[in-house]
Length: 279
Image 1 (spheres, rainbow, N blue to C red):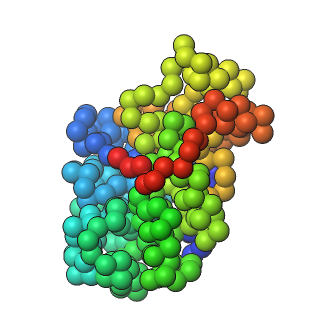
Image 2 (cartoon, helix red, strand yellow):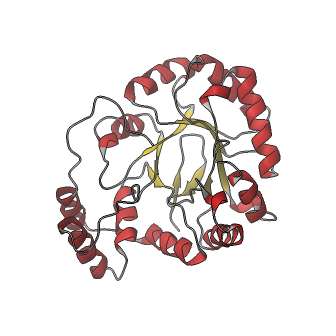
């Protein structure tokens, strides 16, 4: 599994990680098996959040005895993102995850508390060794500009955003901004929301043709496309060990320039929207 720098503080993470939204709502044993299989295959980048119900508890069981293999990320809700609230939320997540530190801690989306309060809490947690880096999620360029003014350059590890073949809005402004400032871009919901292109359709046919050329699957091709630049990561969710293995295989799939151009044409990024899309 390919690893690449995650921000500017010397950390690195697997380019394909493991998302855990709703992972607590299905078969718990299957979810744990999927996470562990992903770890076996080098997908140590595990993403969760306090909002995700019991997902942190599921992860704690999955990574028991394997913490050093994991790049562990969680998120604070905006409603908890005051200085004191952020620290308390982080400590709750650490207890639920049964670990003494997070590799990265994110503000889940922009809320009512001033960014200065949240950043101050992040820096306090960093000094205490409870987190190794911090970042944000669902931040557009104007939010990132404001955050940079508060925190300074080199502090923001990542921005986690909605990104899939049918939703490429972040390529207009967010990705270039993050590339300029050494900020990792993490794609959540990289297969879309129950609308992944089907082989019978025109766009799905393009995916299938490229997949066949690599003896891969269309979803593996999609993940490879979404992580084609050094700043890009993706965190697909897997419901089974086999699904995790399928996702992991995308980490070593390299598309040709011609294949990237074909996908770019089949799935145009469209006009820049007025606001950043999010789920």
